[in-house]
Length: 263
Image (cartoon, rainbow, N blue to C red; front, side):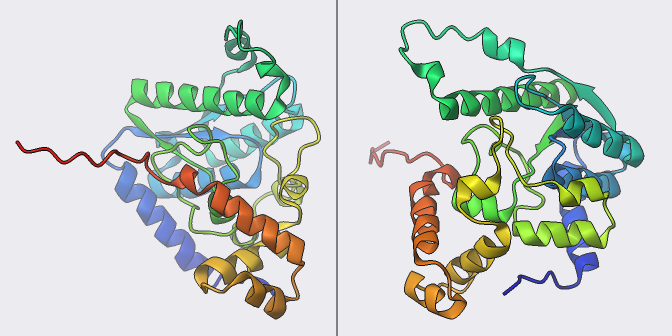
């Protein structure tokens, strides 16, 4: 089963109108560019919506993980679209954190990776604040449903233009607009550590994951029904459901104590 993107031109136009309406009262938008397909597509849609002169692409490489090829791909695509870029290397910011007294904090690669994602968020919002811009996020629906992002890190944004598209639909839209092959062929990865891929982290490729998510969320079917209808792997479905439940807090506002007062 594939989630076919119907009328991609209309989908793109709707996203572009959304961006235009939300960004139009500001000086423009800031987008963190990773060299991956999500940020490349958001950049393309934003440039079409606002004009490239109102978009700034931020390249924020981590010298220990980010490949030169990813940065080159991101910069080349921005140049083709006419979008200006600025590079901020995050390693020095990371080194400035004093972890004295926090034990083995830095030994946990997940915690370190999350901190680096939050450093990128701080930098993006600092630039946006200084230039009266908004921050465009690059998360897709698959990632949002699974909580496959860092809370207050790459999950922090003013707008999520492709947040309604499953990852496989992101690829379909990118192919429809004939985006460069280097983005289409690159294995999806958050690039949080060496050798990381979405497939390894999530347990399957998006071609398998997305139909399961669609059945669970959009059609409201129970896990056993999804397993039967898609002949899906039971352990994978269980893992995805568990991930959604555990990460639901990432997509919600912080709970507020219900205090009834008389004024």
